[in-house]
Length: 223
View 1 (tube, rainbow, N blue to C red):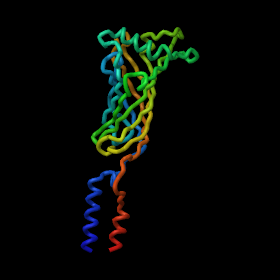
View 2 (spheres, one colour):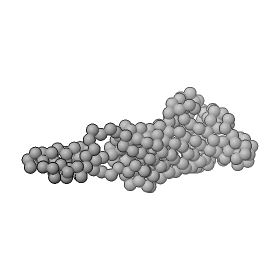
View 3 (cartoon, helix red, strand yellow):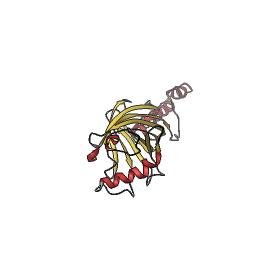
View 4 (cartoon, rainbow, N blue to C red):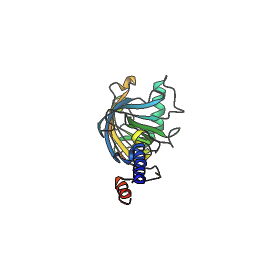
């Protein structure tokens, strides 16, 4: 019995040291978010709060960073916008839909877009692809200030496995979508963004043991 007790104590210690072994970490995550950001300001960072959905993330924060290497400086916002328009929007005008859709990814910017979501329980992060659509209200193929005031966006996410807290070792894929409002596009103020995210993740770490209470009981019964 003494040998059995020693085994059980050792296993319990491993369970305490490995939270994923006893805590149910969700593998399908949905959350709603809101925040602000501005492509006319360098560095380009959109960020805000996680407002609804997954309880382990609600009350936390999120961010999306876009590499603006090579863009005109934010001290000259008209020149910066003209560059963004000519590079990302104008070549991708859809005359049938009357819209422009820009794609920001590692082939169109200096490097991967980086994103993150975190709370007191830990954080997830990785790379992203972002698409922004602007509607051409008058079909004149020119993006005007009132058209910049409203956009819709969507994208995909890759979750890398070096997260933190309860998410440490988890990886996977996801998507997001939403919209933005700009109260004063003439003066290049920040966008107000809102949307939702879906993530499907799994534990991508390689554990040395996969112990359960069923195995503990089996060891006990064998003594």
